[in-house]
Image (cartoon, rainbow, N blue to C red):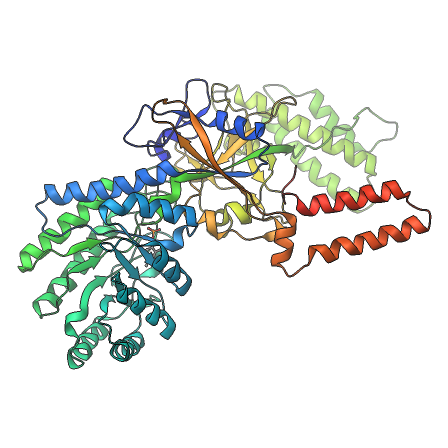
Amino acid sequence: EKTYRVNRWGNGYFAIGEQGDLQVTPRYDQPNLKINLREIVDEMVTEGIEFPAVIRFHDILRSQVERLNRTFRSTIEEADYEGRYMGVFPVKVNQMREVIEEIVDAGTRFDYGLEAGSKPELIAALAYNTNKNSLTILNGYKDEEYLRLALLGLKINRNMVIVVEKFSELTMLIKLSKQLGVKPIIGLRVKMMVKGRGKWESSSGERAKFGLSIAEILNAVTLLEQEGMADTIKLLHFHIGSQLTDIRAIKEAVQEASLVYSRLVKQGVPLEYVDVGGGLAVDYDGSQSTNDSSCNYGLEEYIADIVYGFKQSCDLAGVAHPHLVSESGRAMTAHHSCVVTKVIGEIHPRGAEYSTRKATGEHIIVTNLRDIETGLNQDNYQEAFNDIAQLKEQAMQAFKLDVLSLEEMAKVETIYWRTLETIDVLAQQQEFVPEELKEIPEMLSSQYLANFSVFQSAADSWAIDQVLPIVPISRHQEKPTKLCSLVDITCDSDGKIDKFIGDEATGNPVASNVPLHSLNKDEDYFIGIFLTGAYQDVMGDMHNLFGRLNEVHIVSYDDDPKDFYIEEVVKGSSVKGVLSTMQYTPEIMAQAIKKEIDKQIQRGQIKPREGVNWIDFYEYCLDGYTYLK
Ligand code: PLP
């Protein structure tokens, strides 16, 4: 538990079970539900579902929607806050139809709506957010078609709130709504002065991409008044960035926005809603800190700061409490899916062993190294560490100058790594480990080769050094003995994960290795990449033509707390599928191969029966999964 901090990032949904397997409790209000993740993996193996695969827990999605809405409601009640909570889910965070359907369904009784940030997302929201009492918040830059679609929504009685991000959108909207005879519901996004904290802090401030300055907001109000549309301004919007690591940023934003709100209301602007945007962070590394992949607050504190912050500020100003809207996406979805894959090999820096037996006339560097290895003991291991490093350096120079043979170089490598391992063992036995020797475990660490693509399944790990928890599915009763980084199967040296949950003892927020178990020949070693349900699920690309993953949806039984069933299997991309998206025609490709094989058959190079087998094999692979078998 200490190694992987499952209880901390698990948010009540993940834990290590009694048998040393990871365990999932998918409903926050039913702590007795305990599904063994290893059993899910076993069932997938039995059913022939190939890995890597996404395991999706719809119950976690529902739980998160309920948690958010219930906490807002209870805090509002407790604070005697006069407004309602009318949250929306931002579609961009996970656009998968099944995810949107589940969220809308779980949110119906809370009038929880959707947020769209583009035309395609708006088209999806129109079709899926059918609850007439909920809001559809429309963000992002808009063209005339976008605005027409929003007005279509209003025509069919949806509460489409058109958030003006750029002043020119307003003039277009006024013209269109008059032309089509539809009264819009307008939101104004304010460019905030307060800076977010964390990776997305450029979402606010003067150079922010979106939003109106105070001057533009006042001009917008004047323009709408002149056009006789002042009564359409209903919502004030702000968003200071995603993954806000420090609660202070939220407090400051609430303070600033509530002042803008109350002053506008006092000026006669009929605002009814304030939308606080996204930003509610996920504690990916379980450190509960202001690390980039963590946060120093929880859901309850976040909500209390918003509700009490607005209450206090509005009471002081003597204006009505606005209805509160939030657009949390990351916190709603991150926990509900994970990627499970198999480790298929180990790449050790030592590589293969080569016989180091003394040869007559061998180079002195080889002899010296061998002597150090033979004479190694508890009194000289630090000196030996320095000496072998120097000898290895010299050996490399000598090799480049053609003084050392290939065979001698192989001996140097073998003795060097073997000696380093022994030095590490000797150093670990001491109470005090000299600073420079603390690097040895890292130098000796392995790379575990896992069957997945970072670019498809953990895009943010590659793009922005996002830490995602990586944990073995089982063997937790056994101490992990290998320090590893993970490499994927893309032929790209960037295709690796080397940012892991940091080390609390050293205060290092990010570690370059994760402890894993040694691989057994007769047992598959499955690991999970967790908290991939927000952004990662949908942002991946097809680098090396590795496509979307197979996916299973897990549902728990009400009457049996340990049982589950695979409700749905969604097949990942086939080779044919990914090739087609890149404009290939697989049928023509298969014909081309057949032609070549026929030629070889005519030349007598391939027997007809063998030729047919080769053609079948090519077609079989075209239909197959893009990952390794
Ligand atoms: N709303 C807006 C306008 C956004 O830009 C974003 C993402 O950055 C979100 C909501 C979702 O934010 P989060 O995933 O941090 O909840």
